[in-house]
Amino acid sequence: MNSETFKVLMVDLDRQKGDLIDFGNAKEMLGGSGLGAALYAAYSQPDLPANHPDQPLIFAIGPLTAYFPLMSKVVLTFKSPYHEQFAESHAGGRLAMAMRFAGYDGVVIRGIAKTPACLIIGGRTLEIVDVHYLWGQDVLATGKWLRRIHRSHSGHRSILRIGPAGEKQVAFAGINVDTYRHFGRLGGGAIMGAKNLKGIIVIGDTNLELPRGKDYQKLYKTIYQEMTQSDVMRKYHDLGTAENMIPLNEMHAVPWRNMQATRDDAAAEISGEKFAQELLLRKTACAGCPVGCIHVGLLRENFADDHEYLYRQVSYDHEPIFAAGSMLGVTRAGNVLMLLEEMERQGIDVISAGVGLAWATEALAGGVIAEKETLVPLRFGNAEGYRQAVRHLGNRTNEFYYLLGQGTLTAAKAYGGEEFACVLGQEMAGYATGEAFFVSQAYGLRHSHLDSAGYSFDQKSPNKDLWAAVEFFLEEERRRVQLTCMVSCLFARNVYTQERLQECLSVVGREQAAVSLPAQTKRVQAERWRLKFASGHDPTQIKIPKRFSEITTWQGPIDQDFLNQLAHGYQEAVRELAQSAEFQRSVQAR
Image (cartoon, rainbow, N blue to C red; front, side, top):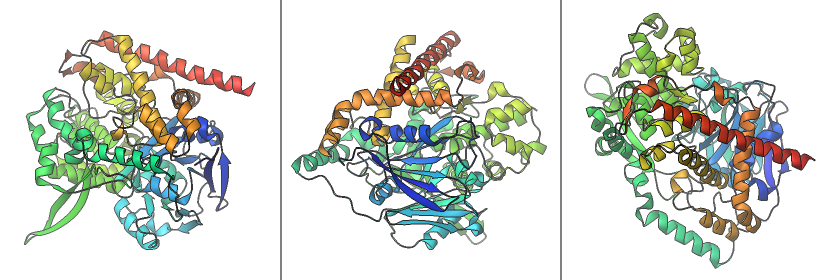
């Protein structure tokens, strides 16, 4: 842990070889988001499209990975096929632990495999296995085959795979990680598909020496007890984020039927309470996490007479329930699981798929498109029609689904209906809380509700203070970047304060990183924005569609003037961040 550099495995699929390199300054880059951004800056090809084989797919962990509870995430950086800009996605599962035990802080994959392949890497292993017979298989079937292909190190390996959506280059295809976790947004699965990678297996096949002395043991125990013996993490273990459905619905803050409404009496039927009472099968956790926030529901479907049933296990949370439930007007919990399972099979981002099909449903009802485009009769609440549509979307069956697979706005620009496309940089998340959330997702770095928690500002600050909101966005983003450099699950943000993180870094031998943590976090925050702008980001080209000004939330009608002013203020603030990073780089170069 006293190493001044990162251990990075460089995989060249063209040469079918890998090289272990020492990269960067561990004190400055911190790890996770910082390391991922630095590797992207070093190895991306700015003039080439996102799906070009020479573009890197970069996985990075942090200095606290495997050493403390909930330090269980991996950061993925890549050029996104969704908007052709720098992108970052996060996933849990066993991947972070497997990378740590394989001895890698980062893995960079470039080139293209000669045939559809599975890349297998470990501390003592690098193989590229021909799996052409899996091309076209769905995510779940692929997972079964990959487990058969590599039977050893069960429990110490992580299995990543893509479905038909990744193979077909759907711009929001995801990467499934260990069945229940995902690199979901902005198209990481399409980049794997462009590299002919059907799967990646990472094996944690070496040993990890823990820090010596009582200080580490004492700190670990303190953190563990905070997470398991206090109420700070209880919500995530009990109902999970699905707990949000009823309170948000009562606030008029849940998008229903393509956000034609923000409240519906049927919310209780797809609430966390409903799932827990009738469909919850078990709870599980990412490796290194004692909380167990992954809620797995039982999907039971009749397939023949005489009460013949199939049953499958499907994970759920608030965002998936919003995307496959309220946004589509699907109000039976079992049908929500059915749609989530089909989206899982296709290997497609649940949020983008659900929001895209919600737009298509309203467009069909309004005569903007016809059934010859959708191929199936899309109606709010018609779960079976949506299941068929998800298959068409994953396989890009016709021109309509090809365009919808590039993003909802791409299809809306071609056919019409931009005014009711619920897109904020990418398809919206499940919080219709007001102006701060809409602006924070539309203009945030990852176009994610997790960038800066604008939904929280809407709820906590009913007085519409422009500069207070901008300051909140920047500070909350900085705080979250600090966590994603470590790399922590964001659910642990109330446990891992800056002071606590500095203490953790110190006891694992990263004293210099502990001291410089505040300054280096700001540097990483700015560098990410520099990369975003350098790859073509132009916030003036992002427009918040008319639908977002037509709704009523718990605060009443949307204040269009405040929304416009906030959008302008936030744009200017992040532009200044990017310019500060550019200035710092020029000083270092001189």
